[in-house]
Image 1 (cartoon, helix red, strand yellow):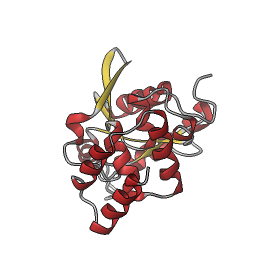
Image 2 (cartoon, helix red, strand yellow):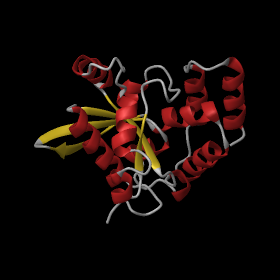
Image 3 (cartoon, helix red, strand yellow):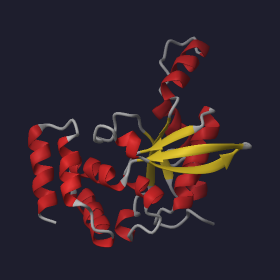
Image 4 (tube, helix red, strand yellow):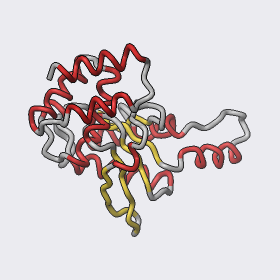
Length: 196
């Protein structure tokens, strides 16, 4: 069965797009974590595909939350990310069935450069008789989001991507400067990228 191994695949990413598009009745799903690389690089190196999770959110998350809030009477504000975690998160039936889980996030989770959506990679799939789109940051934009955090996993991810398909390091540096980052974080990211 696809998706039961340790490494994520493009089919796993498309499964996420279908699951969230169906559950949230949307035509667009954003995938923003490391596994977003699969949209532009299905042959990404193993070190970039080791995650047990795919970070995603539906384009209509805020509308869904407002609609659900009107349906509930308990005063608890529904959160799309929590709904995703409950249905598709760690230890869910989805996780047990497919060997990975969906981490419900929102548009503020990944630190991405201004204009990233205009450069995004789009993948399409079918669900319930309609075409739905997964939107993922372009590789350089995704690398910037990893450089913003720059933990050991992020360093492995960036290094593996750069080794497989050399990044335009000047472009990455420019995109770092186009991202709303603390100046110290930006300088650390630039120093790291210059060392590749």
